[in-house]
Length: 320
Image (cartoon, rainbow, N blue to C red; front, top):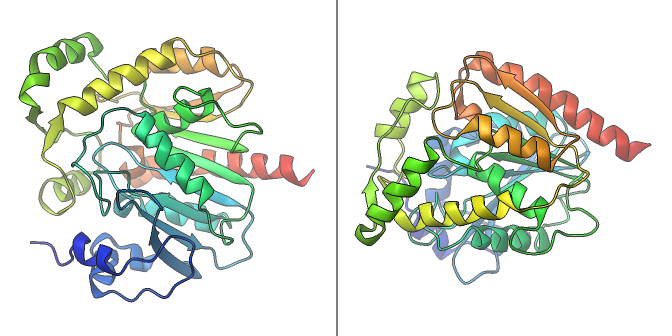
């Protein structure tokens, strides 16, 4: 039984960036449940984007003068409550941190874990960028886990809307990014079989070496959805087709991938990213699984060092 209600949070939620005061016992209970109240931030604000559905966005300011803004995009079935480790990393780097719960995920409204097209994620992306408050200082750095990485890839390559000029971000960090899922041809076959049934029951796999995290997903996270929705799989297939015909760009993302990933077809995906981003830096973590944001502390420390170095490099280019 959960100690908070997204619906009660929605009832008094201000517009994101409005600076309106927001006092809500359910939101406080949500923060405690996911440990967000322990983050070392100067301020923490929450609001809704100006869209038809209620899309919940959050912002944390570092305790020092901000050097830029890290925008986090979570993975399928995830939400910001699970991303405490990378939120804290961004704050330690002196960055303002911003993120949303995508439609149908976490605190946000919408059919659960379901979507017609990844283009709808791009709509949220553009709305968030348009609505960033003054505290979200430039430059911007994007970080995406899995489907969050797909959102950044589609944005960068103009898969659904023309890529912005000048480019939105000075750097993007892709953690186990999604292009194709593992066993891709089987996934496509199962989609054809299941699309008229709406989907199938979700199996909680060992997508992290952190057993406590997997147990929390199964039994401790009230915001988890228990089905794989067929429409979402169809949207993923459409997105992968668009990535397959995209043109290369002169941009240098940081890509971090575990070699025990059983969720995405990482060997295909890395080859595709290498073609699309010839200047990319790719780090492979031996023994790491898919959910890098919630891998064991050993792997979080390893990729944390890589992210720190990359962010410093990106900010150094701006300071020159």
